[in-house]
Amino acid sequence: MAKKGEFLTYKGRPLVRKDNVIYYGDMAEKYVVMLQIMSTKKEGDMEVADKVSVQLMDTDPDKRPKERIVKKSEKTGLYNAMDIGAIWLERELSK
Image (cartoon, rainbow, N blue to C red; front, side):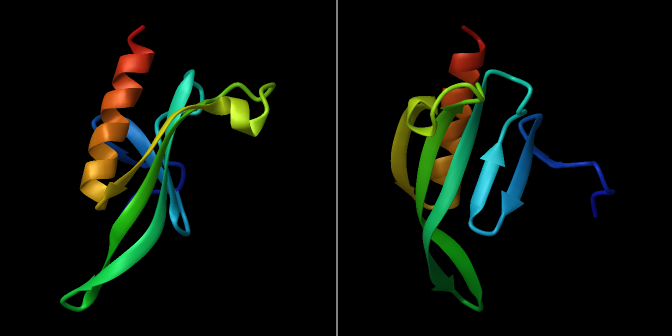
């Protein structure tokens, strides 16, 4: 279990979840990925993400919310959404 102030990470970047929204990346960097779980399905006795909205977002607080969205897509499954989000984030941060 993570201690207070520590975050779960994926590929070296923090993951923060609030309800059905997961933020991937460091808010101190130029971009983060927002994953919103749109629907879930039952797999055995667990609920798993089915449809997930992925958005690469600029962290500039001076921009309007619609202007912050750099790329967006919808994927089936959390793994596919995390995969494309991680690729987008790496590419944008390496520019």
